[in-house]
Amino acid sequence: GRGNLQMSSNGGLPTHSQPMGGQQQQGQMLLANQDQYLSARAEALQNVERTITELGGIFQQLATMVAEQGELAVRIDENIDDAVANVDNAQTHLLKYLNRISSNRWLIMKIFGVLISFLIFFVVFIA
Image 1: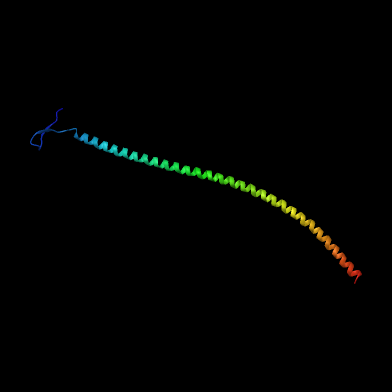
Image 2 (image 1 turned 90 degrees about the vertical axis):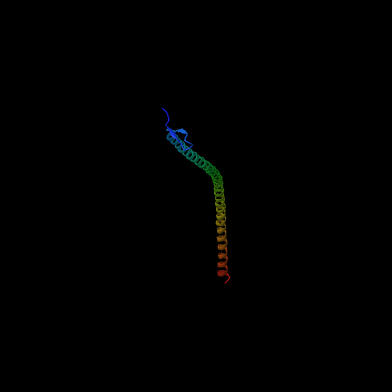
């Protein structure tokens, strides 16, 4: 259990060699590797955190867009209802106009018949 005595270059004084020095160096390397590993893990976690934050922003934008599209869909639905009402109203007006034209057509045919009758009467009896 004793350390070996060696002569050193510092004036010939004996120093103790450290047989544990290699293990200490290995421990330092292990600590350095662990430190690198922990740094890499911390960086990976920061990347995950940034990605999650970006995804949160994207989902907020998506929610805003969905809300806007919902309002737009409601407006489109209201416009369609207005268009259907306008088409029904136009159809009613067109039917009224058709009825007026039909009744006027009979009136025009009656007047035309009377004029033809007078024309035949004048041609037959006056000429």
